[in-house]
Structure formats: C-alpha cells, structure tokens
Image (cartoon, rainbow, N blue to C red; front, side):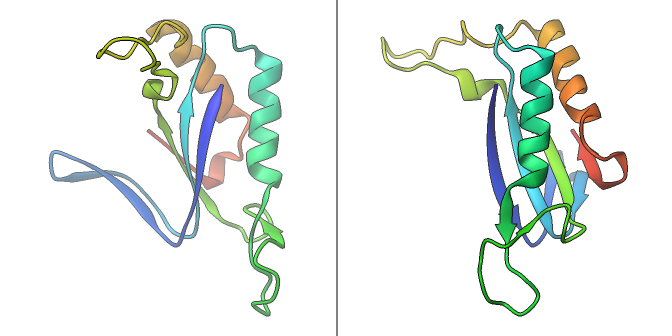
Length: 123
C-alpha cells in the first residue's frame, strides 16, 4: 500500500466541471493498493494517517504538533493505482504490482472503513 498525504487548507476534486468531492482543512490521501496488501496493513495505514502530527498547535508554535483528528480535520481520499507504476524499463509504465481492479476496490473500501465516517469524503 502506498499513500501520499498532503496537508490542505481546503481541497476539491472536479470531474467534467462538477465538484465530486470537497473538504475544508485536513488531508488529501492518494491511495494505491498493491496485490500483496492485507487487512492488517490497511488498518495500520489508516491509524497512521489519523495519528501523524502534521498540523500546528493553536498558538502557531510548533508546526508538527497536532493530528488531523486533534484539529477536527477532514479527509479527501482518492484511489490512485498509478502510485504503483514502474517506469524503470522501457517507455511504458508497468502496473504489475497494482492490485486487480475488483480486489483493489474491496481493499480500498476496507481502508476507508478504518477512518471516521463523519470526516471522510471518499472518491
């Protein structure tokens, strides 16, 4: 599993001119699922994303003091199989390590279930 985490003041995903996901302050999570991922890894990553100290305290002191949970932040989660693109050989990326679509969808949904429902915008 690979997750790219981006701290945001606000974020949205637009498709064909329409907003399909939008959050305020919180985290963007781009999630790639590998063919070898397990439920234990998904649970670990969900907890890690929620507990990482990526936000400043209220006084503006230490930049890395609070987690997304502690600031009551939101999560925008986007499935991103291209995180497993391997470009080392040739001119076309290989996605052999990415999970097959149905397996990836099931594991992705399991990952999302490990996050607080009221704070998640899932794409």
